Length: 252
Ligand SMILES: O=C(CO)COP(=O)(O)O
Image: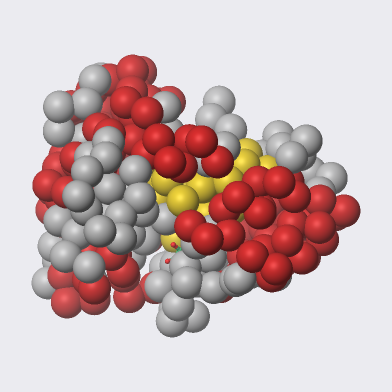
């Protein structure tokens, strides 16, 4: 039985002060157990968020990192810098990073390897564009991205990672995938993991859906057998909404 995981991806939203205010509200209303809770905040808000959430079961995550341990990489952040703050998760290969910041399957793979070596849990994002979906390429796209991300990683490590299936056409558009369609693609991703890393690993790895998830539709996703939670943008920015998503994930 896989523990559901609800991760908020704040993207480029919230100052330190706003992150603190969110944390105080979230702390006060945090009464759901049996769901793993993560907030992936901008780098600048992570330390403040960690401080406010100390003693709670809400973990913090980053939204990117560099694959080298240190070096002359102006503007970049390493895994050990994140670990020092108390970061436990890191979103890697989000479609916005692939689209706007030249992230490739190869750099995602290097980052996955580095994150695991540092003891961070990667949340690896995969998903097809609208054109790819319409061309019937969804299965091929998620296969290539999944195999690419985990190249050279061992089965035990893969089992402890999180994958987020986010169809690009559903991100921030209000056009969510149907729960059945999302489950079908997530089952494909799980079978790719099974082929590469064995059935036990495929059964253990958590695969989230992401793309216009809201408190009103979370239960429909959680009712699907292969969907283990959600990676949520917009609806994770308000504490009450985030907590409703967490509560909705217990319907599993
Ligand atoms: O990209 C997403 C999460 O990483 C999804 O964003 P929305 O929930 O705002 O559609």
